[in-house]
Length: 366
Image (cartoon, rainbow, N blue to C red):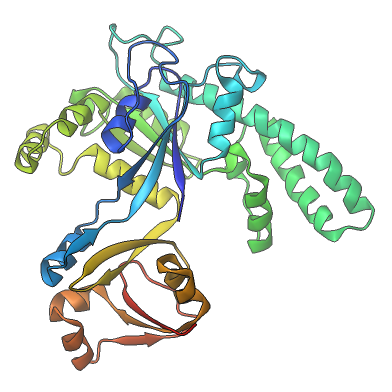
């Protein structure tokens, strides 16, 4: 499953620094605008303590975590929708992503240049929002004219699309993003997805703070929280500089000691990756045995055959049934045989909706 989160924001807010902490890819990070030009793509493991527990129990030859792709995208400036800066390229790169990690500068430092000359994360957020909304308004207006014409000619699907586009257009003209428009049914959700609108993508606001504010935030974070209160969006507080220092530590014990001294239970990178995973609407199921313990990624709500297909397409085509063990039961009984003997093994068919943390074995015939 190839799904991508794009790290976006104004130039010089810490995007590339965060990307380097999070990802297997490496981006140039420097104190000048447009340090990033071409998007940098990297993959990162999704931290999951459950996989570690399963590995301790099964003692497999290999343990494979779930992964998520992260893209570091060039900084956006005012006028991007008209091609200013790297605008057209920036917007095209966002369109290819499934969700947005919007980095906002929430720290003062006279040695770090701000493209607009002063620190104001709410203003910065509005700059990005406005440029994406202008681009979406262009797209919606063009699509609406065609849909209305076809709808008047008797095309029922076009009429439904025109109704949705009309609501999107009204929201955009009011300065609201498309994600603020409520969708009334699955049919509208499908129509909305197929439009690939920039402001319809789920967003996580990442407040990049100074070291002293890494635990509880600061006045800048409070202002962001107030600005996004009606967006149904998450906010994550993180210090990119602190995370870069943690990333350079080779020993796990050193990293944990550093976090304790900072008053943090876990690194911001871990919380960012987990946030990206949630943002994409993903969850995990496991396969566990002597050969391999592995975390597999599926969408929330996926049924058993779909999950089987993530392992191999033949598993989905020839799906017969799934044997399911709940994570807590496996931890308690330690082996598949013991789980079965205790009557805790579930046998599920094609309509079973996979739950996060399920341990699964698929039976199939092709």
